[in-house]
Image (cartoon, rainbow over all chains, first blue to last red; front, side, top):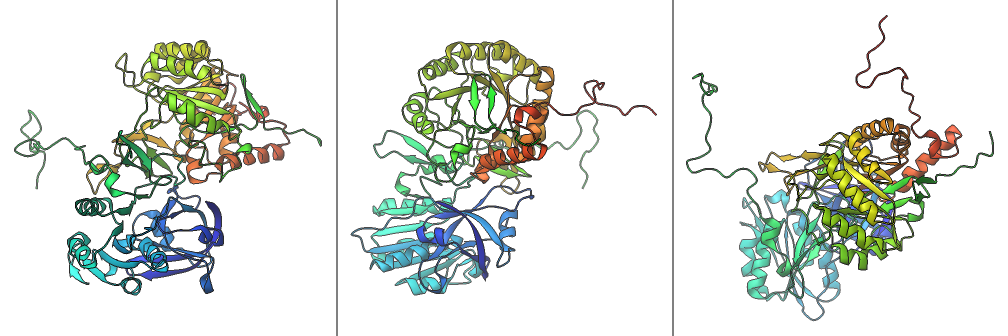
Length: 298
Length: 322
């Protein structure tokens, strides 16, 4: 883990995303797929926490040696600020953080599943897997064609690619969950990697469980520090000996977890925080009590 | 005035710190995380996360949300429990070579007694910070540290059990701080930490739900600084000379100097450490720079040196009539 003042080499537009390349030799030297960076926000603004972004590419050789790349989507003041940064500006970056994906030793057929921006770290992983002689297949998706990250890169890296969009503007209409069972059958996948929003990861975990397929997922839990100090980004994970569970920090114990050990119900429980709707709907006060005067007029 | 021997060292009762800057509770990790990123020898001390007798899993996620110039958070005292802390985490924190102040919390007197008696046997403990911001499980009150009787009882028990100096971390809301701090000092506390941040709520309007999984949280970060400053000023004015650790919104050396001017002896750096792991070191450097510019020898020289009109009564000060 290094802290560095890094120069922005370039910012590119990729559909709805922005890809930023940073000159950070000390970080790119160590970076592995699944790990992330913590980027400081400018001083004197009201948004103060670092932003945490998955590493999309770390180049150690060639003309881009010593650079790291990450992909952000739009929305929120921090990401908007990052998206509007200019080349040659400097960012305060800590990384690489977190535990990376591990490679299968014997298994050879790898299925990579990503939704939206999650594809960024999987393309990095695909390169490592290919370098070790594994077969890579992908199922990638997004809301629309613009939200599918680098589909041509996906094609270049894998034997087969299935693209899913919610509106059918690219590939098939539907989600990656709809396409996954068929893709697993077709490719004979022996191991699965996934990066996506938590509800999608949960469904992917269920599919893997049914098929007894070993899997690794990278979660995108909201973090405050990213170094393991604050215990904000915890995920409930069952202990190996079955003696209960621990709230593990996604930043130092993850972000890569085994979905079979994540306690999804506990993690994603949407307990009713607002009072439950009574039978017959929510009562609406139409008149001030006692006065007979109509409070709300159309 | 050449040759002033400058030192950042401060004494809070029996607790000696090499600099007046301490990493606040819940922001120092478990002893493993900071060592690679920060030269911890430049930090005066660190406060452990709050330890309870039994292990706690903590609040549900999300546990943090960003707010204007601050954060709201609720970790829910996630910790491994007293036994594992003493066996595992405390030795690791102590190996950093920095004085370790152990934060203890609970909802009953018995819990505080058990925590402080177990810690009394640990030479690694430089001081104890009794976190009085839980709910009171015995008297069924929402906030333990808001009542003079309970502060007296709990701080008194912890002080008697403990061989190390004891600091009472008082909640910044719910009670009259001067009375609570007075109660803690009469109950033999070494000093007070001001203080535990006030409750706060964030709303996710898209999802029609609170931004935190635990519904309400506490405000932290620079947004909190003026509140903590006022608390320090109020208590230091009422009880001049008592050791006060300021905690709330300190981000840079200037904030720390402001706290000392208001009456604090040491400052804790919390949220700023989450953003910049070296924040505590930079705050200490900033204090040293200020002392050098003013040609002062020690932070103690500026303590409670806020220039307040002497004739001014408490409360709102009116401009003199023409």
